[in-house]
Length: 309
Ligand code: AMP
Image 1 (cartoon, rainbow, N blue to C red):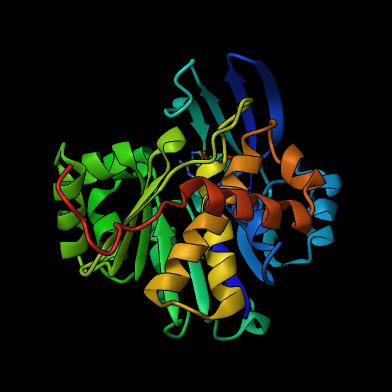
Image 2 (cartoon, rainbow, N blue to C red):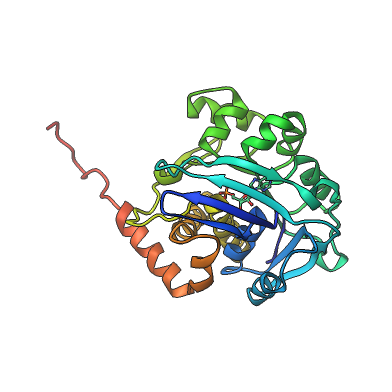
C-alpha cells in the first residue's frame, strides 16, 4: 500500500565535528520518502522554489517517489542551517528560512486518492492540519514535529496530535511539549492527548515505544563512524511507516518489527552527509543489518525453574 507524506524538501547547510556541507539536499519529507521507498510506493506533497535543481528531482523520481504533489513556486527553496557538537544527539538550529513554505497551501492531487497511510513530517502544524482536512480517514496517521514548532505553534500542534494514531518525536521535544522531565510521565501525558502509540527517538540511545498496553525499547545500532545525524529521525520514520505499509501489520508485533526497520534505515543514514548513504544503499544491506540487530538484542528467558542465586 502507498504512503502519502507532507513535509519539507530543503537545502541544508550542516556542520558536524567531521566536516561541513552547504546547500545540500535535505528536508523532512525528502529523508522520509527516500527511506520509505525501499519498502513501498510514496506520494509526496511539498513545495520547492525556482532554485531547486533538476538533479534532485531526478533522484527522487529514480526512487519511484510520485512527485505530482511537489509544487514549484516563485522564490527560494526552504533552507535549514544547523550544527552538531560532539554530542551528535542534539542539533543546534542556526537559521531556518521558510522561503516558499511561508505561503504554501498543500494540495493533494486527485490521483493520490484515499491514502491508507499518511505521514505528517516535520512542517508547520497548520499545514499538517490542512492535509488532514483534505484526506478521507487513512488507516494510519503518523506525525512528527520539532522544537521550532513546539515553541512557535503549540496549540496548533496539539490540535494535530489529537487526530493522529502514532506520534514520533525526539526525547527533548517530548519533554518540552509535555512539560515533564521524566520520559515515562511525559509519555503518559502525550498519550492522554489521544495518541495511540508514542515513539520517542533518543539518538544514539535508540527508541522507546509507549502505548496503553506496553513499552518497547530498541537500541540504536552501534556504529563506529557517525558522520552526520541530520535526517536520522525522518529516515527512521520512513523505514517504520514503509514497513507498516508494506505488510499492513499494525499489531504490536508488527509495530516492533517496523521500529527495527526504522532504526536500521536511520543507522545507514548517519554514516554520511545529506542523503549520500541512502543513495548507495541496497535492500540486501538492510536485511543483513536487521538480522544483526536481532542477534544483538537477543537474550534467553529465565530458566524453567529458577533458584535464588
Ligand atoms: P531530523 O530527522 O530531525 O534530523 O530532520 C532534519 C531535517 O529537517 C533537515 O533536513 C531540515 O531540512 C528539516 N527541518 C529543519 N527545521 C525544519 C522546520 N522548522 N520545518 C520543517 N523541516 C525542518
